[in-house]
Length: 287
Image (cartoon, rainbow, N blue to C red; front, side):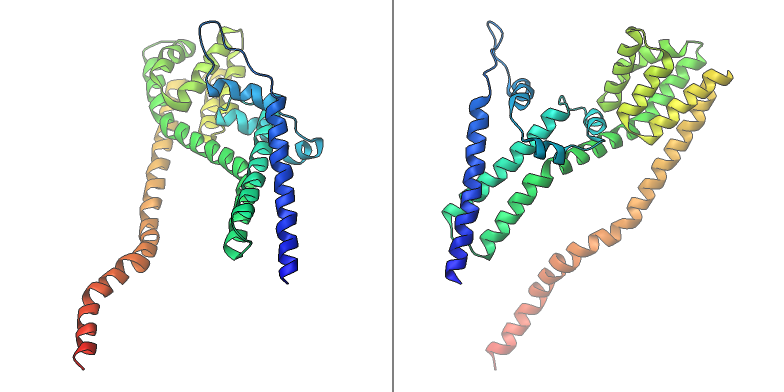
C-alpha cells in the first residue's frame, strides 16, 4: 500500500512538473512588447498580446471553445477574443498543475493534501469559466437596475419635442456604469453610419438583458407603427419599477431562511455556552 502511494505521488509530481515546464516554455515563447518612447505599458495592456502569443494545443482549444464564448466575452466587456480567453484558461490549468506539483513536493500525500490538489485542479479548470459567467450576470444586473433612470430621461426629452437620436446623445454622458458604456457604443455606431435599428440591436445584444431587449422592441415598434414613444417608455418604466419592487419583496421573504443557518450554528451555541456553562460547571465542581 505504501508503494502504491509513492507511485501515485511520483505520477502526480511528474504530470505537474510537465505542466510547470509548459508554463516556462510558454513564457519564453512570448515576444516582449515594446512600450512607446518615453512611456511604459501596463500589465493590462500587455496581457492580451501575451495571451495571443501563448501556444495552446489544438485538442485543448477545441475542448475549451464553446459557441457562446464570443457573446459572453462581449457581454462581460472583456478586452479579449475567443483565442485569448482560451489561452487564459489553458494558463490557469497549467498554473493549477504547477500548484499541485508544489503541494506534492512540500508535503506527503494524505487526505488533506489530496483534497487540496483536487480543489486546485477544479479551480484551474472551472474557475475562469465560472468567473466569466459571474461577471456577465453582475453586468446584466447593473444594466437592469440602471435602465429605469434612462427611460425616465428619454421620456422627458421626447415629451419636450426632441428626436430620439438627439435625446439619446444628450442622455448618454450622464449614464454611468455598463449601461452607459453600451449606450456610448451604440452612439459610436450611429456616428459610423449604422441605422438606428442596427445600433439598437447591437445595444440589446451587448447588454444581454431581457429588459433592454424589451426597450429596443418598444423603440422599433414605435418607429414602425408611428405610435408615441414617450408613452410607451413610461409604461415600460412602470413595469420595470414594479418588477424591481417584486424582486425586493421576494428577497425580503427569503431573508428569514437565509439567516436561519448562522443563527442556529453560530449564535445559539454561543448563547448556550454563556448561559449554561456556569451552572453546569458549578454543578459538577460542587458534587
